[in-house]
Image (cartoon, rainbow, N blue to C red; front, side, top):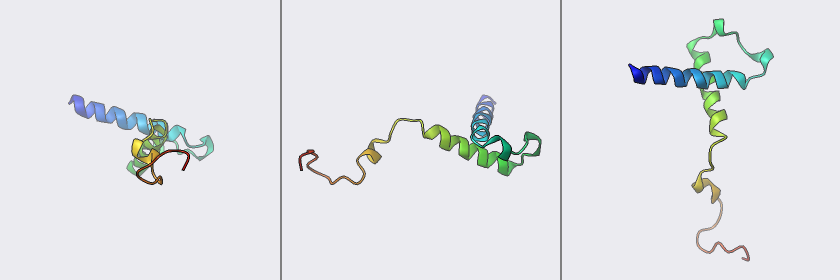
Length: 73
């Protein structure tokens, strides 16, 4: 029961963040939300929140040749 409440709280928080990331005039009223709207708002909220996290160490070195990493070469 607690885990279901926790998941529901996370979904609500991410859907709220996703909704706030949309300009006010483009937002759908809460009373007209469907499961599709919730899904896309949660996805948008996750994208917003994940942009503020620490950088991925693997992506920091993407595109650099392996081996010697000295700046003079």
